[in-house]
Length: 339
Image (cartoon, rainbow, N blue to C red; front, side):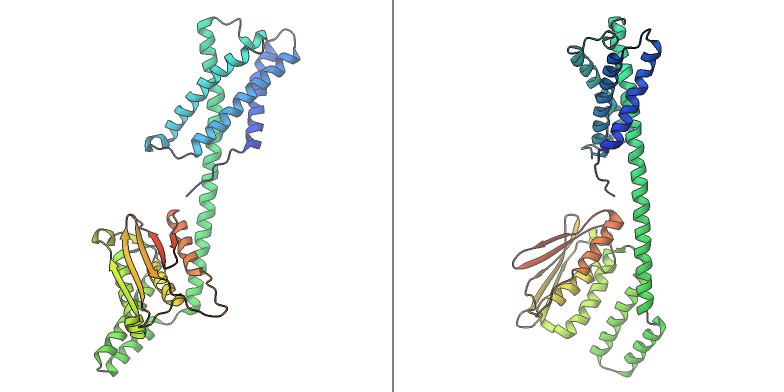
């Protein structure tokens, strides 16, 4: 699940102003005489330091580190806070060259203790800002996860309702198919009925599943293609080249079937103009390609509902998306393999 990078400047401004005012309270209580200009200088100094820490901490927290160990919360905390402390020391010396206010310059603090005081002050400010930043980040992740879970529940509920609307009694259907099979002695008819049974059995078995093994999906596609070939004969040519090491992986059920169905639905399939479909594995994807020979239907326009459905399922299941590539002669969809 991806979390968008956002610096939340309004919240950062409020928190930074709070830190600046809080840091100035001891100076107000300790001072013998109240100096408004000194107070404003210290508030402004702390405010801008806090805002820098706020923005930098957000950058670190929301960024993807090149090394996995840097993605651990404590690693990010130490790196981010340490850097901000280092910047705070340089920031203090830089501002001191411009503003010559005694309390601000820490003139009553000895040289060795002055550096420790700057480190301590920078650590407090930076550590507090990191805590607020990371807390908001976790809250955002929790809220987004809750929203995604609710959305997935609604999607499943909707799918089940649609399934109930279109449901046919499995026993009735299988009994009917078995009866048809006994009424004929023609091998091709028996095989056709058997493949229809396989298709419907697969639909019933995985209709409520989130994922399915690649091998099971490929076996289902074989049965589905057998039915299609009875209609299109040599007009539909399908090539498989999926490694055995990939077949134990997973993908959403009916994903391959949807892509094959789309290819047949949108393109001319004829013996004189065969439709070539290839299903192969490539890197971390199952790749489905077909040559383009679109049907010339007046007023026809694809709704892309099938592709959108697959894309949405991948996003909800693994926070990944399918890749779609189209040239003048070929249409390709790459389905990420789910390990």
